[in-house]
Amino acid sequence: MSGGEACDGKKLVRSSSGLRMVPKHHAARSPFGLDEPPWVPDKDCPRCMQCETKFDFITRKHHCRRCGKCFCDKCCSKKVPLPRMCFVDPVRQCAECALISQKETEFYDKQLKVLMNGATFSVARGTSEKSELMVCRLSNNQRYLFLDGDSHYEIEIAQISTVQILTEGFTPGEKDIHTYTSLLESQHITEGGNTRATGMLLQCKVPESEELTQMKFTASEDFNSNKKLSAAWLAAMHKAAKLLYESRDQ
Ligand SMILES: [Zn+2]
Ligand SMILES: [Zn+2]
Image (cartoon, rainbow, N blue to C red; front, side):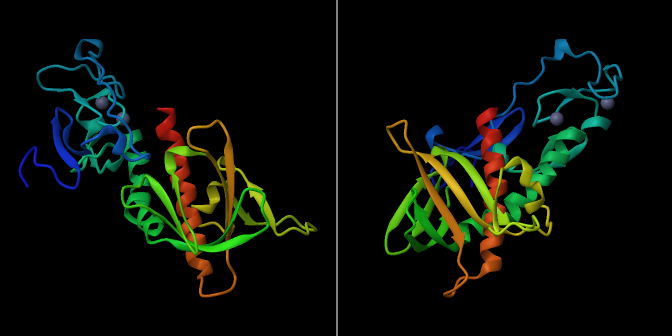
């Protein structure tokens, strides 16, 4: 592949940060993506923003591709993959950013595949008690959740307003085995803790209206569904929601 050649609706872009493979149309970009940060101008940083070493001909300045701040080589030497900004190769990052990017690697290397492979859930729409067994998977362009059963739904990731992961409750005496765990409080789900995700509540905007619709996903105990797979899918969805919120907040 040569420079500028399009591939699957994508194009190669070269900037001072490195080579990126981005969608041709901005609207087609991943909802988990991040924009490249503006670089701190050279004139505004006479010293490394970490160790405060003064820059000169020997101590050259380098910009972290993730935060755009200015560092000496020692404080910005790690090259780490940064798929959220569509970089083709690992790029230079400061220690703080390198750590965040390394943590995201698990999502891109493993969990994204889990989401795309899909899992089976019993899905109820709105407040309805009636549910339908459906295979849920993330589209290859990361922009939709496809639900397939007797019917077919597409949820645009950009329209999702809240994600709540339901977990097995551990509160003694509590009759209901499900507890609603808010996104930020449920970090241990993805960290391999002993709390297993059993379902998910999604709220999404109805296109062209201000209304919200709710869907409840429950890992199914029967049929051919694999509970472990469903739990892994929910953990991946949980991480995806965090990235989604971050991307919106930037
Ligand atoms: Zn430094
Ligand atoms: Zn940084």
